[in-house]
Image 1: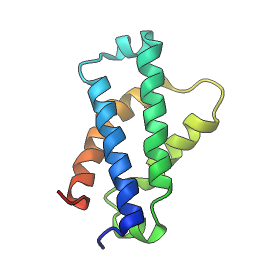
Image 2: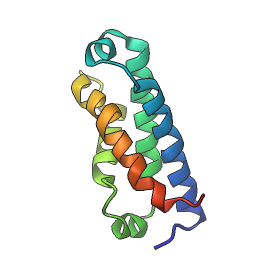
Image 3: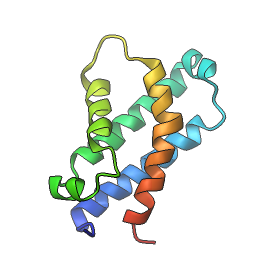
Image 4: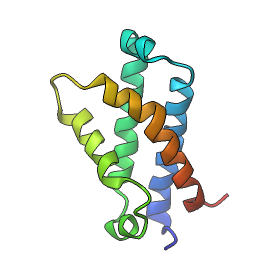
Amino acid sequence: MLPDERNLSYLWDMRKYALEITEIAKGISHSKFVENKTIRYAIERLLLIVGEAANHISSEFQAAHPEIEWAQIIGLRNILAHEYGEIKMDKVYLAATKSVPALLERLHPLLPE
């Protein structure tokens, strides 16, 4: 299923902000991530934006592309947006350093050059 214009716009947003996450997280150790609030907050905000864009992708497109972990992406967005208590830094760090690069690989074939 090819993305329609609306889905395509959100896919481009997901890609754009996922690339920014990888740029910020590149070479950042877990300990530096934990110590540096600016880096942490920037990555949390960008993950929230990626999740928000994913949340706007049509359910039909999501169902046609199970290779993207839609529920996990949107779930993390919901935690970041609504969990005002302690956010698990380990989970955010792993998302930024492992899950986001994998997401970029899966998004690539869905987006035209």
